[in-house]
Length: 361
Image (cartoon, rainbow, N blue to C red; front, side, top):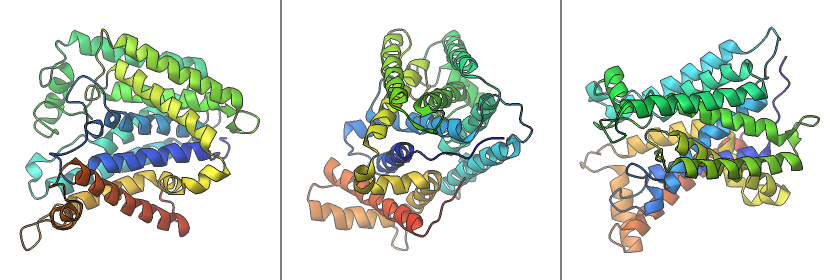
């Protein structure tokens, strides 16, 4: 049977930082005034915002390598738990989309962040349950090559006409994020699973088997793996552009490499002193998906019109924050609102931590 899941402070630290970044990027005060690193690249290219979601998928893979056994002949493997968790994540994502579209349900988006996470989790978990370390690499390479060959064979990589957009239109019709396609569409599942499996490889490399704790050699291996993936991704990008919306193989390598380097840095930082200084990030890392779900739900609710016809967000941002900061709704006050909103959810996460509430979804 699988052993008890070890908890690694560095993983909670990186996961918390990723959730904080997710909330920050998704909640500017004014979408027309956002600092460039905090918005996604319009198509090909990479910004800091583009690294957040793949980092979370990578971290999920690391956590899965701790929670699930490798190739095993044990009878009690958690197949039902894997499927149940995947279904819950998909349903949570669809709930967010329904609430965001209400009452115009005819245009509700079907793909989404939590849907992608749920499907990636199920597929990657089953691969992990049946794979050795060597076969994991075979899966990763096969998925990246398959996605690249299919995408390249499908024609140009431009918005709306690329194969990924055409597949999504055939599967979901108009129920997509935009007419150009959906960044969490079906074809990208191949490479998001590869991202999670890279995280699983990193997790297995990091731990000293005898103690289930990070080792110095494991951290060195993580640094080498991260640096190697970034270089490989940049080299590949000369032929296959880095593109988050398409989740290209070059994007996977660069984003996963950065996440691996971030995890190595968190291993170095996650001592007793860092635990005190970065406590808010540890709080977020304890209930990441629950905090993300609730923050997104609240974001939507804050944009509903009040009796006056204005939303809570408009009142807080335009009537209170902008006059106080005096930049006419520019990028500084826009960022200030995002930081304020993120701080609210850090406080919620801290309260949950203090009360011992841990919601596993």
